[in-house]
Image (tube, rainbow, N blue to C red; front, side, top):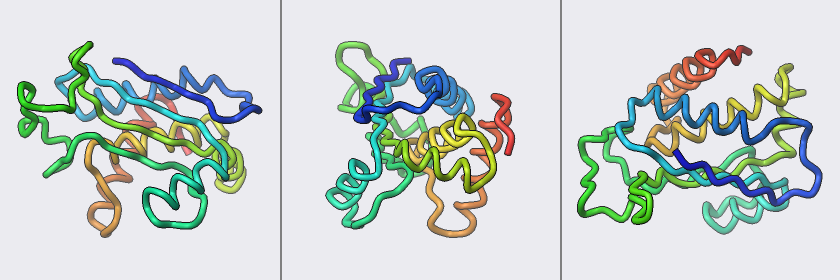
Length: 165
């Protein structure tokens, strides 16, 4: 598993970002029983950085807490049987790893949402990474059934690593 983490912020929260991010990414990959070694890129930015990305890529002129950019075009979430290893550009040609996609985290929202929801910044970071990883695996929360399923999976991933609300 390769996790590339880039910081676009000067002041970092007093967290072990890399350890938490890698722990939850690995937990999500294991939870989904992904048969491949994977690569994920993570960017930690601020309100301004994510606002600009949200406007450019989604047409939403506002900051958000996390953005997910999957590389796999899933027909059904985490359906690895549909991935064609030999005829696909979703594998890193140098490492052979499945390129799951990119996660962009808003450090400002990690701070504010942790306070708002009454838990630690550590737990908020873990939650946002788990949430985003499920998006990279093709899950969504636009309708109630999908939302309920995604929330169940998030909870199981987080609690499996000792993150409780």
